[in-house]
Image 1 (tube, rainbow, N blue to C red):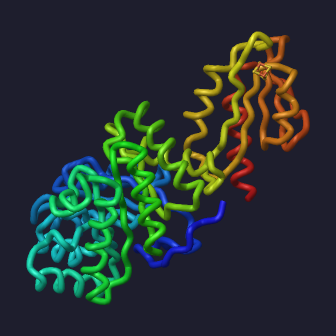
Image 2 (cartoon, rainbow, N blue to C red; image 1 turned 180 degrees about the horizontal axis):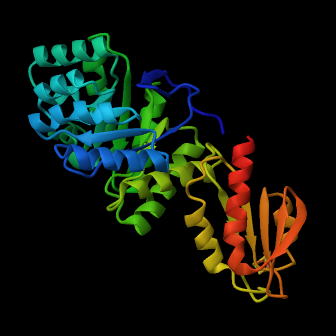
Length: 354
Ligand code: SF4
């Protein structure tokens, strides 16, 4: 896929835009003032593959809490701020790597100037975020409601505020709850600007519906080369957002991470059940972040062929045992109960030999 050409900048140790990999983000769901809980959640997100984390800053205590949080964590930390420029100033002083803030919403010009100066001094980029639910009334009046065009014009107006102050480390998100408007807004913005885009379908729903909705919406844009970072917004555990984000990128072959499990849907040829096994592999191999391939197949018709293309293949056999393949060749037979441990040990061995 041909990526859209965008400007590039650093967000902490992560490059955004240009030819940088599309990064996976999430947001903490703890009260930011509860530093222990927030740090623990960021650690869990980091282990899951989160590359950038954002925390809501609702008051001065939350802004001050960012300093110990930043100190205790390793991925770039973004402060999410609405309206209050003072919170942005405290957050930058606390050492955050970036801000999520709409400069047109923080009031007097001198406040914008102060924030931009502090962000420039600390090297922190700013994300402008336009959501369909909060497009300013003036743009709704001009463009017939919170339409894609209203969202884009709102975003561009915020961009101009920053660019007029010579601030260029900007990324933009245009998020709508419906996929059609989301796609239209992002396509339109991409046609007008080379500013990096952060993708997301806002308020997508629970893990089940939200994952499908996010994948459906983002895949269209990603396949067109649009999108430099992404977040899957789910009601629930943020680690799930990260897993789904990665899975979307992996499915489109845009990034690789962790064990990709190819498991057959099973059918009347199934030689012994494999469903539990496939789920167990997902859980037991989740800690391996190297991009291996594992095939879990239900019969000798397609199993050996699929296994030959994988690092390890596990094929059900009518004898009741599983036939295992390694690096494209038959390796050994094993009782079903032992297979997960054998495969896990083998991947860990491969990992240690890299
Ligand atoms: Fe059916 Fe075998 Fe294909 Fe699985 S691999 S779906 S059991 S034919």
